[in-house]
Length: 169
Length: 131
Image 1 (cartoon, one colour):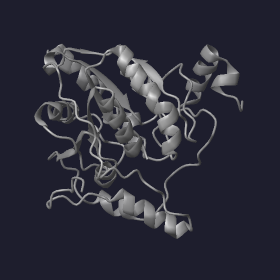
Image 2 (spheres, chains in turn green, brown):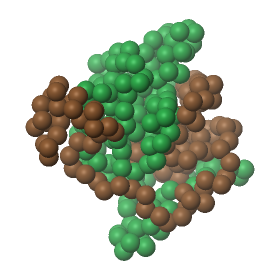
Image 3 (cartoon, chains in turn red, orange):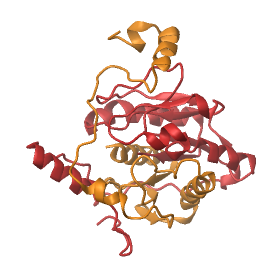
């Protein structure tokens, strides 16, 4: 089950790469979340995009100058970046991916300028007052589920967002 | 792990009644975590939403992700977008080389000046407990 990639694609299988890397290091295999037989809930948008409020949620360790940085050890906190914050005040810290592109242009992992442009063009109704960011390299799914996940769900409800755009790295 | 965290949060948000959409560059992880819907960009990790300084491509990807929320009728769709980055980078991505940096348990900053700004605003104990 689950959606397999189309034949013409040859995506890197990061689950396999991780399994092989861990085996090489003598580590136990990491148990990835497997919901292939458990479809997600499904909520159709209630309003057209041009009337909807969108919230951006990104896991690349994005913070704004003045914020406390993220730790790299299952940091379960999130930061809230005002949608109006200048893009050049955004920074990134993460332990598991190449940050070169993000440091050059944060939109590579945090497409806030695209979203702002779509609002200006009338394609999107509005953006939530803040974007929610965290350092997504969290190994413990239990701790993620107990702490970060409910915090994000609560904040999205408070922000009254209609659609959440989630961007991992 | 980022793709897993994002996928799990997307599922939780949708369960709370919010429509979610996402962008993925790790098909197998997204397939396994099975979020409500995602577009796929076949890019090196760290460029999920598009190559740096290519606003037109970034915009097209963001628009595709949002459009997906309106075109799907059942959960689990992963839609491959046709933006290309070539195949060369995949050799290194598949090599079993660990590029991760040590997992520090104190706040980390891109620049030293960011640490100073955070200390100024939040105090040393929170912003840099190891200072």
